[in-house]
Length: 565
Image (cartoon, rainbow, N blue to C red):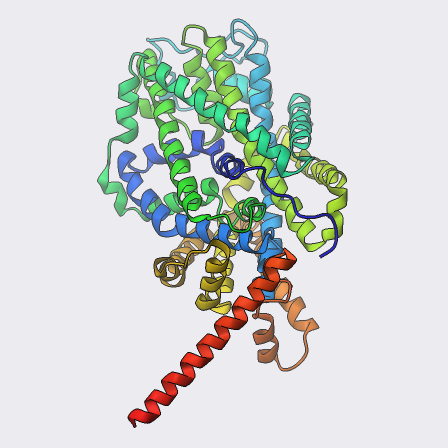
């Protein structure tokens, strides 16, 4: 390959922190706690952890193994099966759509950080210029959460009216919301400054952006459990409702939360692993990252619901009237609870700074996955890394402007609901087909032993071959049932369509009968393998030796069979 040499992590701890920063994001704070309480509390942990161990950890291990072995991003990793390389491009499209709306979500904490310096907090009381006649403040004798929409809170109106100027629906995009626009721009500037020098600079930044949110979670947890009513919220959060397990949607929610949070099929894990040293033993980190991610989600639930328990007791209502889904949990409900605390400005600033850092880590890896994917396909671009990174950020920023409008929150909700329900599990399924079924278990085992010095245990091959694929098929089928109309179906499938379109292109450019073209393009290409020239020569020699050994063993078995006859 030509171009600048591939970057490497300064240390393996940087790799671990980057993967944690990618996996642990804003969704751990707002998505998981709400799903957990809505789907049976502690009972939800049964399908969640079952999916984690049966599907999540095996997929993380497979993706990090392939990325590290080939030092390849989400596109070039499919040199293992060129016919399925469209799955790599599907990953890029998936990430682009996700960044388009997620970058705007990242702008919201910046806005709240700015307003957290105002005293009193601007969402603390009614009577502001943006408040309506329906605004009612939370007091012990108000039952605002039990309303049918005729009464709203100052926090709700601050978020939807003052900050976002939200329109009535997705059909009404409206004008630009300039504060969101400028905060979105600030977010991209910070992201560019962090990733323009590659993974070595990212590896240093994550020491703060990953570690600090955990410090904040500790502080918020300690503060939360000391509030009146906190334990009522925690009990509400974890108390199991076993009857919920009979509902198939609970199991589907557990699976989709894993794909949104942990990130298999999104390309980020492949990209991060591709910067590892070749002989790094990645099994331990592939187990550790999912466990820490899941533990953080559960812990964030304790942090959130301890405060919601306090808010419910203060307002004199049931906790299920306080908890809300999606961004509202982070930007409406939690600010309402924070405003009741002593030193509310400090706690608001701390919470929203944590949200921002959780989000920007995910942005680092997601954008880097897109850039690394194309640079692996076109290595000459590596010498222009800063320029390519700048152009990528500019294009993504421009694509996301629609989310900065008055109808932006509706667009965000629509994209977030549909973007990954098919794409992520389909990409994972293509990875399994390419690595285990067409490349072959014996070749994959040889590659792992050559890379790590340790054999690939049969357990992983069994999981990849027989257990994970049926799980993925069920997730895909159920996810497609959740699409909303033709527009939702298009969003869900627009990235997936890259797979058949690229396969058709490959088959068209090949020669011979159709079945011969399919067989030839299902074999690993000449680009597959270690990129280091010395390692590649040793690997080819090891493969040749293994083939000779197998052939000799086969001849011995045949000779023994003839003697027996």
